[in-house]
Length: 260
Image (cartoon, rainbow, N blue to C red; front, side, top):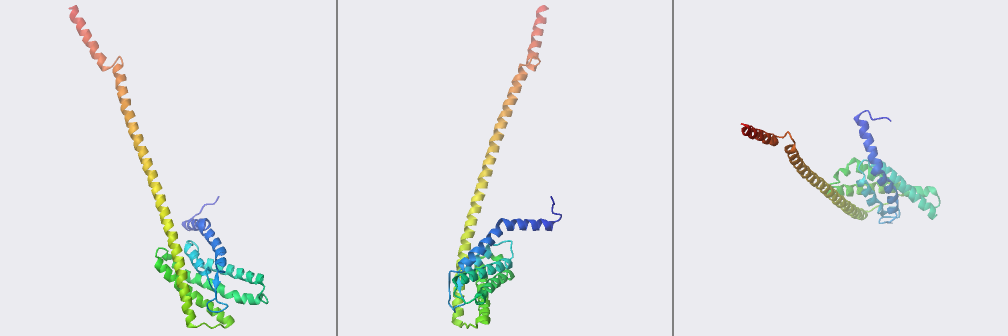
């Protein structure tokens, strides 16, 4: 069995343990949930640009991740969304071939990858305890990611977006941010209540231990007093005790006076 030889190895092992304990499950759930949530969609601008619940679900999972860089989940999620949509299009059979489907779904990958990179660069996860700032960063990141997706679609399909449609994108981004922050605050509230309950149980347990120790101390003190009393009675009943010695001397004195 090999042991870590320095502090850096200890830190790496602790991070890996934390990753496999919690973040791995969150990442796996993200790769399943985000592609499915992305299918709840509508097309406000054109036939290529979609608005779905995949973006808020992705943002929510990024906030939950603690020990994993956002770039890796962004790449994996973008890839899973791309593959999932391509498979759906192939199963539907409406496209002429694989190449048009790849071009059609390529912009979605760039959306998630841009979102994750900006989330990592801006270190938005440090505002977990400040929901307003977290929501502001999420809003700005989603606007930038939508812009990158629109640029990719313009390069591929030469689509044109009007300023009115950009306003619609901003409204949708605000609604997504509001949904994510609401769910996250509910989760934080639940965690706080769980910690309070756990702290209360620990305090009650400690109070019970202290009360039991106090009862044991009182019981031991009474036993010690009873033991001392018993020792005194035993010593007084012994033949060589001080009380019997005095009575014996008194009897000797009386006998001497009688003989004289």
